[in-house]
Length: 427
Image (cartoon, rainbow, N blue to C red; front, side, top):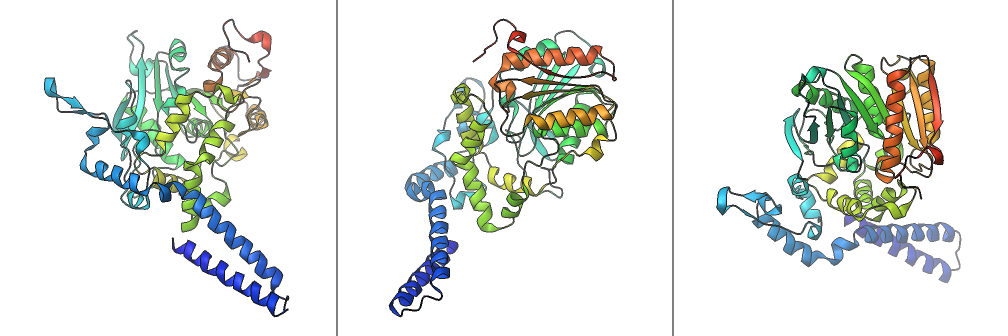
């Protein structure tokens, strides 16, 4: 609000100065004053636009927060008590809207309120980790079991694997999906010695989880930023990664552009970016990830609306912008990968261009790594969500190729219409 007062005072002063210049017939400072007035009005307009929901719904939000303070976390749908007398209460999650006061109190929806039936939680490395896990009924030792770990992209979570979770069970003996710190339903701690939102911390967290389950070697499937994590994990722990599959990988890219990081260093910039992500801009980015916007399910949009209301979400986003990202470079790739690499990319990806994967495949090929790039036409940044049938067809082809080919063979393929198996959804 102080910033708005300053802008209002400056705009008022410039308006008076313009009127005086016109009356006094002194136009020497007129152009500069006009531009200053225009900029001031734009700043005020932006501020009011970003804060309109908080300003207009103040009474309703105050009433909701009074209810929030008076009820425990169990009121979000978590069972209270046990046995026949146990009861479950609900609070409408969509009614929760953050205010400046709630931001300072770190209020918000507890992660457990959005959990699924198969959601699991564990305490590991200073965070309460949300994950999902499936194991085949075939008994085998953990270290010998074929295990596949799913790593989501920026802004994603275990939820993004919902369309391919069941089909992926046919390709492995153990399937694990993890919500990394700052994403999904994993806790968002703030008062830690080390920034838990960095890429290196995420890598350490990944192998800490594998150690807890006694898993010595695994296959990694990474989407977007999760692809960079998968490559980094394979480079730093070559004996523990059997195979990696990258989906629209963000290698060579930083999820936080420099100007966004610079904005987060200022108080007004923090409010502006957080408000943008919470408002229609966040939904616009979500829609941009899909080639055919009509395919976006309503459940995905609603999930996004609820996730940004989780406890400490805004603070974790700021900490995430300060953390060191895993931007894979040619220097990293020059060390070579001891495991084969498969890449699946939608040809109409507007967030990470397919040329990024073409370059990655070429660099990996030059280091002697076995690689296969599979491109899916008429598909955006999230093929495992937008075209799950086509994705699974491509994924099975990729892993079959990598399991049977030598490291001296490389391939770049495009999934044509004739390659779609019966039952696939072609639009």
